Image (cartoon, rainbow, N blue to C red; front, side, top):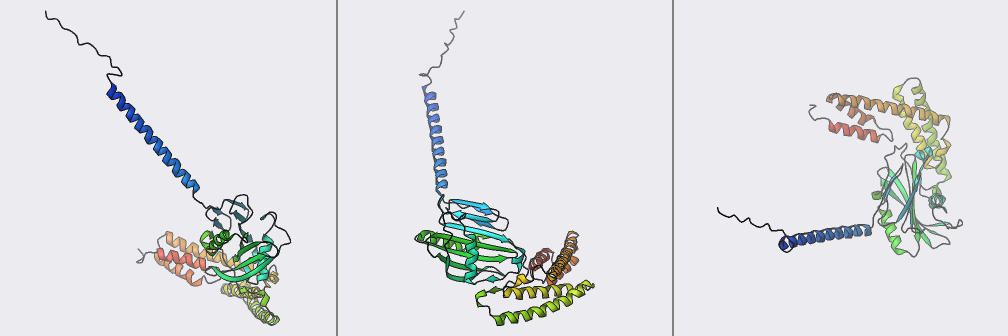
Length: 358
């Protein structure tokens, strides 16, 4: 019988498996080095991102604003925003304010430097700039008009303080019944901040957005410092004529003549525009005639809403012929100041109607 010698079992040892061992070690070292490299790269990238100057967009009820790159601190309260270049340092500062007042809807843009500075001075308080002496007076270095957007004008002013080494720039404008005041102040010797702020203010409406608020009148741009007694008398004569026509058409509205509504509103608004041009619009606000006008204005708004009910219904039913006719009718009849937005809405709807009505 043949003897069978079993093959001895070899127990693996580090020495016998050294090739596999070092392979595992090398792979582990490689993975560790890749992880360290990846972590270091991510950390470096994070540090670079943290080092980059950033800006913040702040949303408010009547505006939004994007802060300058790298400005370190900001605050917002109700209807105003303040932004500081350096945290804990009062100057330089940028300040944005929106003020709502029904009377602003009929308020002229006054480019009189004294009036502009008074509005700014009322907003520059010790809360905005701690330690600012209350006795400081603003001194105008120049006033200029500028366009906010089509139909909306603004006024800019450069100013100094009479007894303090500060300089500033401000902008004031109105949109509907909201007044916007934007101002900036920097130390006189801080040329870098001045250049940065002036660049920011020059493109203000790239960084500051305002809603489309309906206008009530074609807002006059006036200089109250140049108004004369003769001009005042002439304007009041024109106001009297417009008010007589307003009462004529308003009486017809109240007797059921629907067609008299639009001319009645137009004549009253022209009277308000004329009073605004001599800075006397507040004489009319709150009167019985003004309350009557507001009643008619609300009736007009309901009429416009009904126009769109007809248009929206036709669009929903794909009745393209009716929709096209109604959209064009709105475009032709939305002619009251402030109704351009309605005409634009109807034009947008008209553009969506298929050419062939299919």
